[in-house]
Structures are given as C-alpha cells and as structure tokens.
Image (cartoon, rainbow, N blue to C red):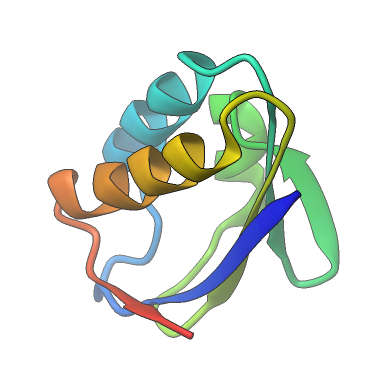
Length: 91
C-alpha cells in the first residue's frame, strides 16, 4: 500500500470538473484507489463520492493506493491533480 497526503491550495478547492478528470484517471488502474478527507474514505474512481467530500481550499486529503502498480498509480493521480489546475502542496 502507498499513500500520500496533500493540501488542496486551489482557491476553489476540489471542484467538479477536475474531480471528474481525476476520478477518470483513477479508473484507469486496477488497484483500489481511495481518497480520505475529514475521516471519510471514499473510492477515488467515483466522481459522486469525490464530490460528496466537498474538499475546500486548505483541505488535506490522503490518496491511498492498494494493489496493481502502486507507484505508477500514485504518480499518475498526483499528476492528474496538476493537469487539472488543482494546486496542491505535498506533505
């Protein structure tokens, strides 16, 4: 299992359009990909679950990858955040 905690620094937080692109990217991988925020753990492959978290600017989220190629999956998810214009700060 691999995990990484990041801070969402984008002033709009984790909003709909980038959340959908990130969920789509997570769906490309066979392993489990979870997003944890405020003691809630959801499947990052589900756009509805991602949106239900309502992560604001300054929110810290943990991406957790289990199974498959964990290193490549985690790297791709982190890149997807950047490609969608979501500013992040790694912890």
